[in-house]
Image (tube, rainbow, N blue to C red; front, side):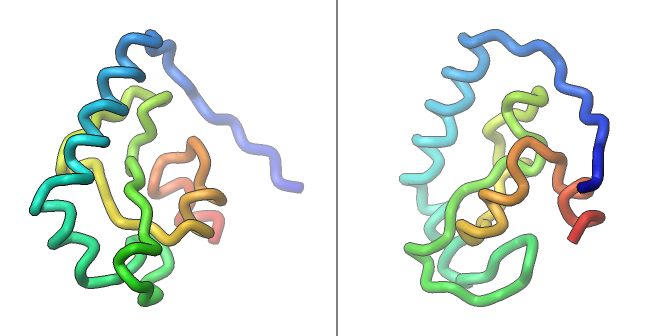
Length: 95
């Protein structure tokens, strides 16, 4: 098994909670509905029905990422689960 060193900055519980609330609000937005309508996973490029795509933070909240449009992408459940707390490029390098 490959061992990787991942830097995780300290983020407060309040920061995490606030970012999750922002993401929840964005999931209800027209912008997000248009984003998932294409039905393509950002990471693997496979097609899925829009309701099977999840919202992923390219830079995870726990690593200081924010719930902003430039940091949110549609991901299939498999890729989102495998990515965990990696940065987008770290995940793509290992696949």
